[in-house]
Length: 573
Image (cartoon, rainbow, N blue to C red; front, side, top):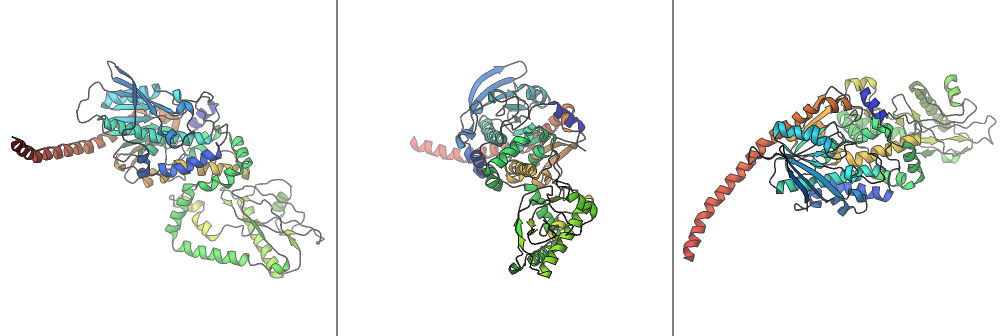
């Protein structure tokens, strides 16, 4: 059950996200295209040279530790010039190291990425970095997020990003900047290496780790497989300026007509596809039946002036209908609801009744082949059942009121009822309880009721999945070094209906806390640290084994080459 504390805590924070909208369409297009390059490990590593320049700006030795600060130009600006704000173009970091390493061949360093609202270094340094150094002699690098701390644009208030595109710019920066720092650490002789973060920092760490071409400790805390549920279902969704996003989405056709076609909601297709395979060959049989019925229903005699106009409006919720007589022979209760002249929400039973009566009406129209003149009109007709499972494909028939005495305008839908295949791929409530492998993600808890609001929200889901879903990124090099820590009652990061980390990363370990997002952050810092320590202990065995292998290889080479050197020396003498 989602934590009530998470909802209360979020309600106390007054800031609104994305107050300037989605971002420039041309910038979003560039980001979507660049994501395909950056999400592939083989192409991403080529974006950052191993010797990328890093400038050290400060070095201080205290009684507790050595503190090093540095900066470098973010590679994101080199590859997508103009997208990174001026204030964020230089990445700043702070490195905390033990004054003395217990083992010469073992100098572990972990990169810590910031969660939402974590500006500057102090919070991560005091809550997790210094305790880790005392408990396990782990070194650390704290990277300042773009749009945060010294990298925050002047006109940005706190952590409230102006545009949706800013979150993708932030993610792209962190992925490439993490590669710079990991390469630099390896060059400086540190290792094994790891990366971690809490909440948003945990997800950013997962994205960065997917592109590192060597074994890497990864401990994402309080995050999951995608950010789409965070911004469309979790408590964070209430902090988004949806009015601005909806207005912008419909006022500029580029968002709806071009950009929406560049993104995909990952889990809907993935889960349906998996269930299709699971139900094979029944799935194929139902699909054939659907095609057969569709062909039958669309075979209309054009000579009798009967024509269906199929309109495909995306994900609408309410039904708009005009009419004065009961041509469909509906129940009085349903008829009264439809003829109120306003938008109305239907129950599952009413939807089933309407579906059946429409199918009968269409059949009668086809069979009687009368000479009524039918004119074409696009009417907005959408129905949702109790589970918010939308029916999308619509068509409209309208009787010509100039011909008929009993003037009627019937707004109806062709094949409105769910097809056999869709019914198969969307199990009912009983099936869901039995077969938990097919979760449903249609429910969106932000109080949106109008179809245009839901379409903009679906666009948000698609964008977030396109750029943040781990399924779109490479699997980390060594999943045995991954320990993820999640909160069971996390209201910030809903997991229902999202592909699990275990499915995406076979071999990874996922630990669950009996807590919400806020309570886990406040009460379970020790568990986060112990998970990081354990993951580095796993890595240590592989690291030392590799170091010994390199040492033995070097010794053998020296033994082989030494006689040759002596011979050459004798000849020269």
